[in-house]
Length: 374
Ligand code: FAD
Ligand code: UDP
Image 1 (cartoon, protein in one colour):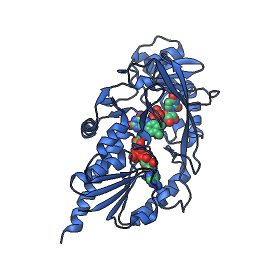
Image 2: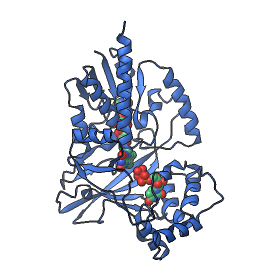
Image 3: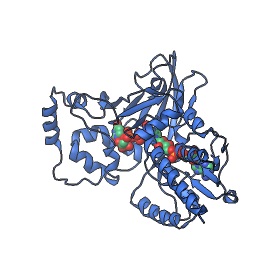
Image 4: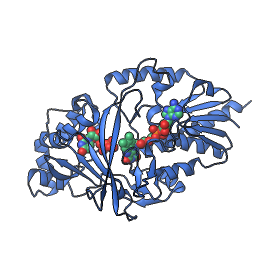
């Protein structure tokens, strides 16, 4: 039996804690916040009773059967399809870009084949292998759609020109030549009936797991543990000694309304003159519940200061160099495993986070076994 300290009670920390606890190891999970589930945390708003996604809209989607079974083991998932609207040039469109968006935007009535040919005619074919976000957009959707839907939203979201950002950020979004407006391509998609916090609480509910909230990691906590799993920021583990990795943080400004305020869970604001990126109306994440009132969040993105919650790893060139130096340092330490969105400084969705946490648990168990072999 080993004694393990896990820093962070998000999906990464909780899933690993559970896997280790189930085979008899003793696990202590700490989190600096006063709740579990990290950035996936949900709570019921006191005034309206609506389930709110405190750190931004979270939709569960995956192609991974193991991950889908896992999440369903710890909470009931309700059918949910994310359909986003986007306001650009003060008009409302369907997102991700699909045939409806193309026909609306260009005032046409194209069929799928004609739309494909039309968009291909807009594409910048001089770009062979797009490296940046901007090149990816110009190559695959062309300048007018790029400028309307992506350019200004991305500058607001990331605080830098799209030419400085990797193409991988845009590759998250599909472009479709039919009327399918599902934001995701994955086989499974859903919303937890009782919220993500309930799921993470269920994962952590095991006799071999002790949870300590409002507990910030300090180095002296190490003693007495056989291993540490770190899901906090990688650079924070090393006291930022090589400088800080760049993050964006978010400010959510809530407002109340009655009835249906915007008619959809998420509306993106792609225009430059609107300072926020999107508005989330939380009641639409639980369409099986009835609420007369409504709570919405306006979402603003900005540079992350020392005291702010890190949300999105920026991964610009200087971040990548610094990241490599931290990764080299991390590889030299025995007895600490770095996991998750912050611990590996990657833009990870929940399903990938859970998949990697399950894999890390197996690797840890194998290493514990080889430790105890004579
Ligand atoms: P986190 O959830 O960040 O958990 C890390 C925990 O460590 C935190 O609770 C933190 O308080 C704690 N911690 C850090 N440092 C310390 C310390 N020194 N001492 C103690 N505790 C510490 N994914 C999807 O699949 N679908 C979506 O729709 C989606 N939407 C998103 C929207 C936004 C705005 C954001 C930011 C992310 C979104 N994600 C989405 C990604 C999702 O939030 C992550 O995949 C998930 O939160 C990663 O879990 P984690 O445990 O690795 O990290
Ligand atoms: N994006 C954009 N306009 C939009 C939606 C997205 O420019 O209306 C860009 C933006 O740079 C964003 C990226 O596409 O960071 C990926 O979008 P996604 O919805 O996956 O971001 P998330 O909200 O999940 O972080």
